[in-house]
Image (cartoon, one colour):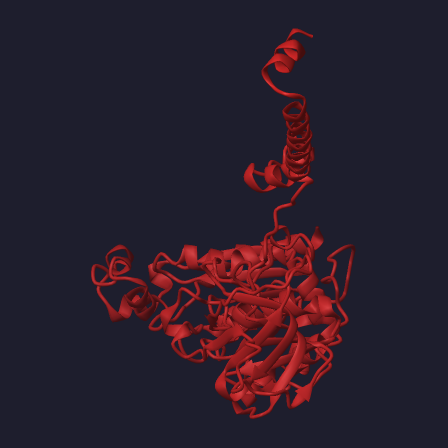
Length: 454
């Protein structure tokens, strides 16, 4: 009231009227500005405050969820690189290029200009192997690029690109670097996948054709010779890898395969009848079958006949076979599967243990020279993952041919190991043969018979 009296004495009637109009206008402006601030404030908070995912502030995280675009290629694994791409993909084999236009798993278009150079072979740290593996360029498909190749052939299934270069000619590496990883990568698609092969080797493809045909029902493409541009809705470049000649179910929780899944797959592939070995119970008249894996070059048995004779005296039916001699892969697989016990000196031929029935006995002869760690990683651990009963026999220097070639102080494993893997391999793998002490070895074959009773 006092304020109104002072105002009346200080201004005329017309002046007071103008001031009233100005006051009303100022109030309207203040009201509008306040309303605008209230409307804008939540958006301002959502973009300026850090996004929390804890249960204490769900209202903030729900305002603007964090968006993470999945990389097209994963090159962080020490053993392999792999690209998994969904969208529109063009594969130009002649130029070793994969062009992609893709989106993230949340349906948000990826505009990042990312390219990768991938060698699709699961032995990344090995420079010698990777030197003979072709490189695939994976890069974005640019809309405004008039020089990009157009599709020649359209496909409706997923494609997997891999190499049969590296050490693929070795039977062990064919499995551990390619076939097991290929199973891991492609089996879940139920043959609805096409294989695109770089470093194409007709002999290799023919040798493992039964396995390839049971993973894919589509023609295999030699992409190095493909001038056509093949377009797919999904492409995987490279192969998933877990461990040497084995599978770790914990590494692929979405598709928890194990090595027993792989060996079962092989039994289906080759129509192998036996899923268990001979049970030595009661007075069975059928003798257990022992396969001696023969070698004709390095690490061969120099008294193979003597070993076979001793084994027969224990009640075994003995088969001596050199892998790779027979050209009929199915027939050889059936022969291995018919055996209850398999033995051989450490080497690629032992890879055929993948064809044994579960619970069969596998005996690895460990060469002299401190190679226990190699034998453990390559065959002992995988054999156990395949549910085989593992035994090993470590030869002594007296059973090694090296005792005739070198004085013992010249072939000292410790000093040679210090020279590196190539020196160790040259002496103890490439230049060593084995003369088994049959009396010393007898308890190992007797133990195998005991295990068949279990």
